[in-house]
Amino acid sequence: MGDAMSSSEYPLKNRRLEQLSEAGFNVADFKCWAPRELKPEELRAFLAKHGKISCRHFHADEKRHFKCPVLYDQTDFDKILAFCLEHNKTFYTLCNEAINTKDSVCAGNILVHNEHTYFIEYFYGPGTPRDIESKGPDELKTYSKSLGQPAQGERPPEEVLRMVLDARRFQPLNKAYIIEFSVYPYPVGKSRDYVVCWEWRWGWLHYQLQANQFLQLELKNAQEANKGLGATIKSLRSEVAYLRGRLQDPDSDRASLPINLPVVQKRP
Image (cartoon, rainbow, N blue to C red; front, side):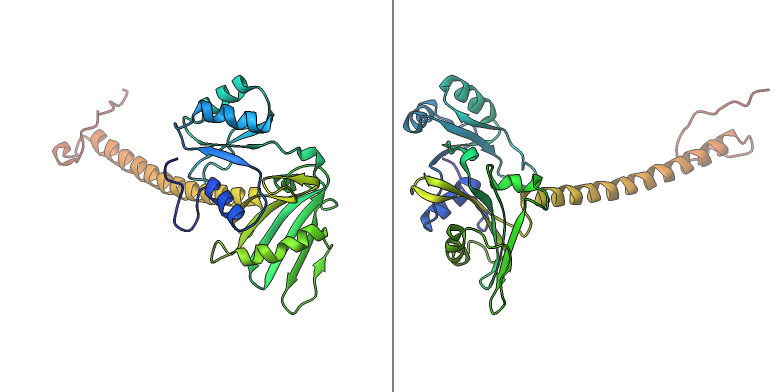
């Protein structure tokens, strides 16, 4: 399926899901195709296996392409195929078994800062971990623990706390990372468990804040470039005004001017 690694340290999304599964975490069953490598017969077989699937897309450069086309909970193969063929021209296509987000009991992120410190942000009710971005302070819960210190915040469900130990041992990076999870009232995913993990990713902020942080950096760079361009334009305008003045002066030596600008004749 092409090169599955965007870097030696930070793999592509499909490989990160494989790493979670290999480490014993429950994930939704999925299949992935590299850009321009979608195989309709494999897509049809995956839909037949699950009956209903969700179709996501992602780019190797996730910092720049953090919002990609997605189609949830689909059963119509023709609609699925048309959608995936169109976007597979540019993106990786990742289809997973549809898990009803309306039935979610709890969803959130486990942030592992290091082996001694972790932080959980979560909310109760339907949705996915990405919905944290839209939750108000009355809905968003937090819980944190550091070695040798009392826990702080509202204790999450026991299923989440049981997963924390495995999350701290996971260590896919030598820096902070996040595991996204949802808790269900019935078994879901490949392992048929009550907790499903959607992905792991780097960072110390939740997803949209990371995206916003990148955009702010891009804006800052653009503003600095714009400042430099503005200074160049100002300098050029001053030079043009100076040269025009020289050209309009009948006593000036036009041959000594570096460029040949048209002389503006003075009106009588």
